[in-house]
Length: 197
Image (cartoon, rainbow, N blue to C red; front, side):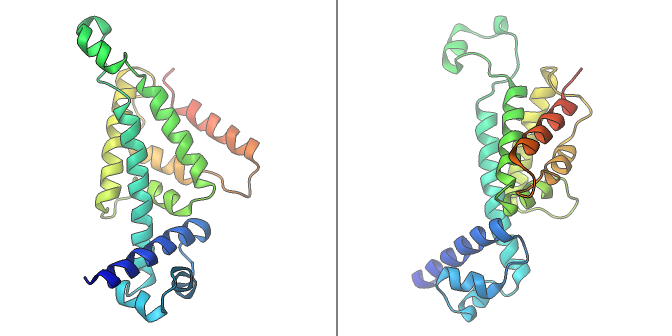
């Protein structure tokens, strides 16, 4: 791909990512082309259908979701008792980070971002689907599954909760039509529901 074509593609995708986040999958192709500063024909040369462009924008959201999940996972260590870990390991990691707290923080962050980011919301809901996933959705799913498994092993999360359950819960996160206090209450109730008793 020529450098100008690659630059146009990046601009189109950035504009699509922003507009899909704001407006959802029904955003007009003309609006995306205008926001990208390109002709509609240029947009269609890169993305022949709106579905292809929206999927690419959602994939960018999935990459952001994967990065969030991987960062949360990186803050945890395998749950072994402190007595089973060497002094060097304890110093290196700074102690054991609670995977349940990291999972809860991750879910809260995702739910908060859903308010203004429909592409991220779509990416999160795609985690639980049975359709073929993009590599970014797969990447996010793997990180969340490992983090969830660690939280369950530590006894903080119910053993019957799955990544698919989390995807369904996140898909129901309230949007801007719900006041912030009620959104906060929603996530509080959801998180309490997945905790181990």
